[in-house]
Length: 324
Length: 190
Image (cartoon, rainbow over all chains, first blue to last red; front, side):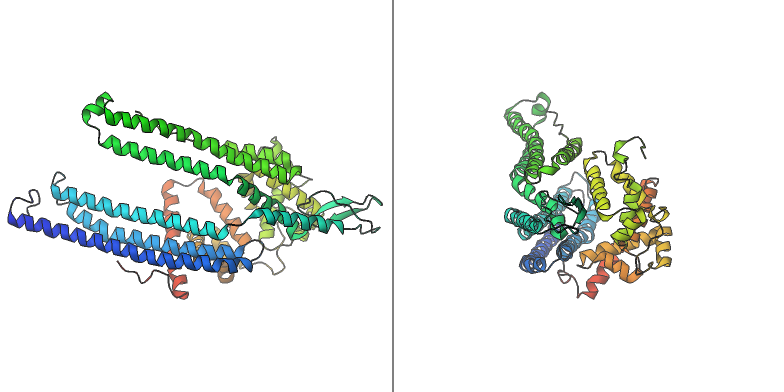
């Protein structure tokens, strides 16, 4: 095979056409395969969305049945992801390696081969990204719950229950005015007997539900934070694409219209990069402020918990070096 | 353990070792009142101390309390007051438990099986209990021992175990899928 000079003779042209057609056929099969997987994702997620409410309705307070149900959905999504990776590994990559060893890197054929491999890998990556996004969306839809009425109802029930707790010794009302999250000693104001007050499963869930509600009330900060992070990544990718189009002259002198465009993108990127961690900080700050409004007796702990969390997420903050 | 670190001060006389060993026993099915009686405290004292240890862990930005808890959790059976406690149903399968603690590959296999079971919609911890007589608490105790050992492993050894575990996960995933009538995309061919 005239591998280094395809296109020079009729026979070479024929070989090039055969080679291209083999790649096209494989790529078409990949497209069809991904479309078929998509249909299965539709079935999987619509079933998940449809059945989740009944699983949740009959679940225990720890949500174990729903955990198994959503794990199974994630397991099926993971199985499809593995299936796709296997196709890349066994159907696409061997073809790339079979030809790449025989082509000159300067040849047109090699360029076609490399771009084909890149396209196939990108299609797989995009499909996986889309799958992840769809699974996240379905999970969010299923787990979405308004915690305002849930928490309000919980507290009303707690206070109502407290009204009827009497001293085991003299029978006087214990007049409980504080939230107990677990069993606690409560002294009778009349006979000084130490009683053990057991707030029950609901009392034990108060702190967890308050946390969910505080997160719900702070979600807009998290959304804005993620938006800025995505914006930063998108601007960085745009810059990278433009950098690839720079001529050597523009690259060396760091000048020219494209370079100016890159600089403009960079200033927007830096702004997004600076705003993202500020918004994350606002998110956590707001959660703990809300928690303290809901459970004021835990204020001191909330402050310490916030500082501990803050030290951790700030520890992993990093900025890109774009070296413009 | 940093003896002078206030984060390790006992809470109502309950040390981090008491708290960690107690949790290992509770995860194994020992009742809370039996734990309290062995520690010589009433339930409200234990619960307040428990809550206090959870708060300490949440407030500890360097994770030293949780890391030490992991180590002590793995030493629950040596705890002077709680070590001998067993759930009412009795000890699990001692032979399998010993194998789990001595045979890293067996431990990794059950890890892989447990993940595969959850991904198949089963209760992975229950599956291990039913098939090998090893409770969640015992499993986690052994897991902590292996995690301690992992600190001294080379990256090649760690990779070897991770790959082995993943291979087993796939093997069990196939087995569970076959038992459940297959995966949703099994018939989708390239």
